[in-house]
Amino acid sequence: MKRETPDSGYLKHYYGYGYEEIAKICKVPAGTVKSRLNSGLKRLREELSNERR
Image (cartoon, rainbow, N blue to C red; front, side, top):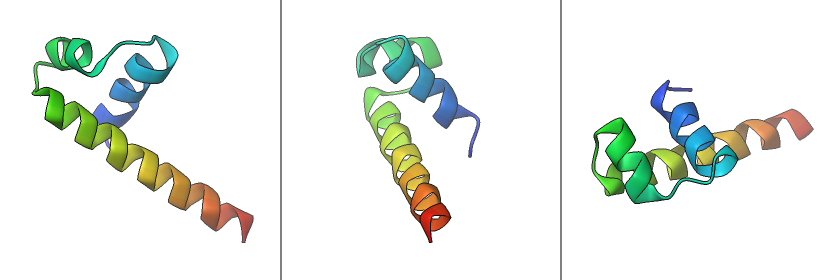
């Protein structure tokens, strides 16, 4: 996984930050944060799905 994905994921899901807050911390647009999180979750689902086979 890319480095920014876990960082954004921790901020969102572990610490409870919102997209705008994460965007300010990471100095990127909120849309980028949403995209990174969605991409990371998609990859995680795919990896977990492959492990079950």
